[in-house]
Length: 393
Image (cartoon, rainbow, N blue to C red; front, side, top):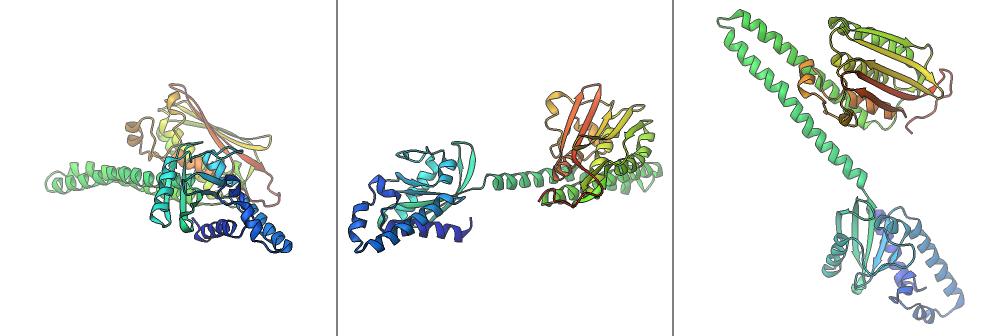
């Protein structure tokens, strides 16, 4: 939380408490407004104090951070609009106690120890969220000022990154361990079994290729997650699809898989060409991996109203209904054994989802076990001569 913001909010509250004019807490009987009026010797001064009070109150109400003032009994006597929203406080009269026991405990400690307290709290009402809470005691144990900032998204992002690191470490262990074992086997076989050396060397190449793909996908995904925006250059999706279909054909021919396409001309989107190439490449790679020998893959690129649509259909093994909502998660595999056997990293569809969302689009899957799958990406379409406009901001 920005310390300047915290200090500013606390100073405004202290000014309202000490400057007269009653503040909103006078309504709760905490600071009688009549004493403030008696202390003002002139009407002009009173008017100036009232204007300053109203200005400070308006500042508090307009703050994006929540501000709550509790009296010495920890009863809420003021809460701005943001605080009411974050804590689910009613618009009318304030309750006699805070709905969050954690926040009340933190406020009590700050009041008892006479010092500032900072903590990120888990709040379950009115919705589950994480609130960074800064509690400052007022002078003479008159109460506390609580400044709240919603950091739910930040905490979630940190949790996802920790999980990502843990998952990546786990995924990297397998090929590294495999390479170590194979290297030891080659060393032993080199003495008197040349045929075994050839077999083990072939396996080493396979594991090395898998490890290289995993590292490349990890780097791609990391770059995508750090990207705040993408280029807004017109890119012809039709041309990208044709190029990637040609590149995927050699792997498809190895399994006697036929790739057919219906790619309309001049279907344009705005974005980063290399990222869109990665998107199409991963969809085709996924289709080839999960389509059995002799199967078919069909790629369609077309304009549908304001959207550019890319769909990749295969007649492969299909995806169970209960797994379809998770296929875009990092490292999620419907069939882990098959994925590892074919060299899949478990990151391809996660990359597809990230690229799609960075380009302002959506991706969906329609699949039935035994009948194949269709992945459909919809992106905002454009014309090659449109003016450049930001996509992600």
